[in-house]
Image (cartoon, rainbow, N blue to C red):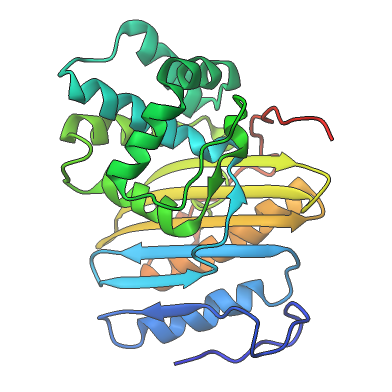
Length: 288
């Protein structure tokens, strides 16, 4: 079922404007998500990509799933996954130094820690992990500019899938470790996809933002959620935002309707309300 273009959406022809598409084994859910995500984006400017997967109801939604975006700090989850994947190959634990860097990188979005791990791993190992993970459209940033890694919804959803279910790429311990750190992100950085999540649902998140001369603000959020009878992941990537807060609000509008449609019985008072002053590390990019 195709959802018609809503008045106020981006001024492109109906034939060329990407549409939200959803499928589900639960009767009526795909149509509802499709309608509500489309409505949440109807009056928003900028370019938005959305990915949703709920294992419990075999539900998926996508919008601009293969469009590329500068990663900003979202790539830090890939850096951590690469570190753990590489350590697994030699059957070793992370060193205390690596664990400290990883914790700072994810829970506080520490850029210096990320740069240290990025340099330690090198682009060859990062590409090796991407190949093993099936993240075929992700391109590591060159010249040490990890925040300019090119990411897309399809690959971010693939990464979240590997983190949240048993597989041969990441060990169970590695997956648990990544989820633990994503679950301990400081409150000022717990905005985006967690918005509207019921209190019965565990929240794991990593966000990023970055401003450049072209495409304005890039603002992204990826999250994994378990509970309330569901097991789902959400990725929302955006650019062309006039301000950081505009991009945050766009992502949170999408997240709220997804959480509400998947877990409709949760009372409004129990749903997560992110900080009104969201923060995130501002990553280094080349001048010009």
